[in-house]
Image (tube, rainbow, N blue to C red; front, side, top):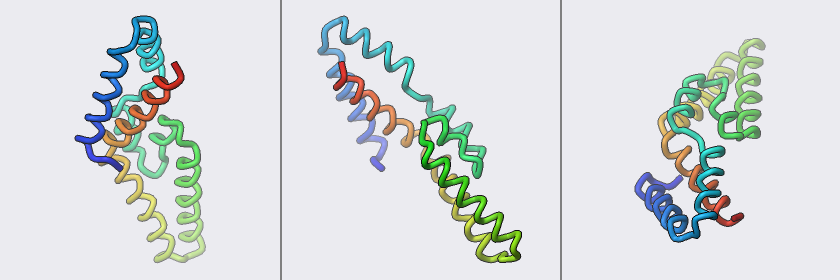
Length: 124
């Protein structure tokens, strides 16, 4: 993942390209961005759901959401089979991945939004 400075520089570069576009293209770009860009604060609030992974659904990362659920259920299943050490480690792995999403929420959403803005700009 890129650092914040690189992401902000990339975002500014995209916005500069948009400013240089004609009025119609610029208007359409901002309309599409308003519809599709995600809010980092909403992502962070949903990341507090930790093992549930609602923040992945917010960004449309369905495969990541499915992976989190499957691994978490495997951990619960291992606990039910009295494999306490392995089950606990699996659940802690999920929590670690989810805590990363929580603490890096700003950068995750910024990177996703930059990719989306580049795609919108290319498609116009």
